[in-house]
Image 1 (spheres, helix red, strand yellow):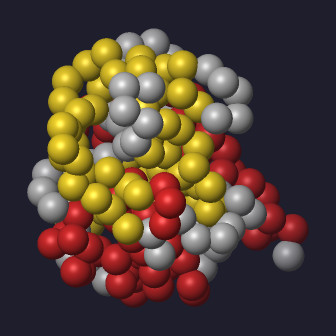
Image 2: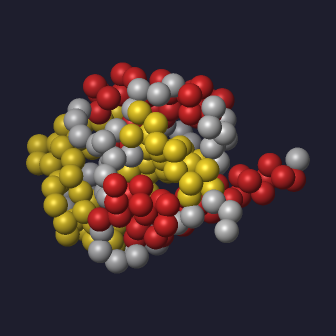
Length: 197
């Protein structure tokens, strides 16, 4: 079975999410958080994964955001981020992050998906959140916390670029396979389009 080549940017990734990507049919190349866009593209990926990790998004963003911006500007690659990767993507798209008065930690955090109205029970570990009020045109909020209304997901409207604040691989139920399947499908569509040229 053909595997989709995915570069995972490691901001402190847990092995579980990398294992989940591999189980979803992705061939993973893990690169350090400080990697440049050129270093990412050297691997000719079909998609880019922005991992979870600890810390202040502003500090990580000093080196992560320029790389993500270049990928957004110079390629049409599918990009999927979780947790800190979600915040890095939002910053690269022009949004801002805010420090939460009460962070989200542990399991059983209810999150609502706007498009379906479905509620997912998620696992989270973060003290910062994306400020949905600062999302630029062309980017929409996809998920919101039912605890405090904070942002829990975004996507670009016309591109396969999306992210969630929670840890899908640690959440109970089928959410992990759902998000990874969407990412895999995005990679597949990109491959199909490339072969049609």
